[in-house]
Image (cartoon, rainbow, N blue to C red):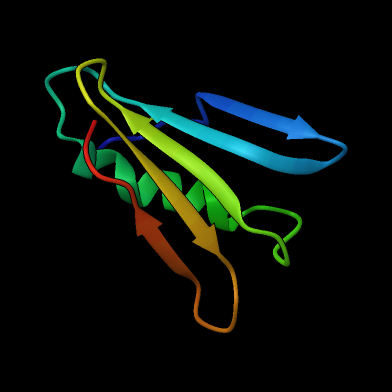
Length: 79
């Protein structure tokens, strides 16, 4: 189990622009995905999409979350 807090949260006029979760290079990006999605679901403006990024220092993936009756997210390719 890996625990933590939001590493970076960028807000503009109470609108969550970007959430970043970072892990040590020894961790897979998959380890951070559930944690980042949990943070993103806490967005106080669920009518707007929220964007996130997971990085381990070597690679990163962007995530877009749209909250609706069943929240949906999509992942970028691995960079």
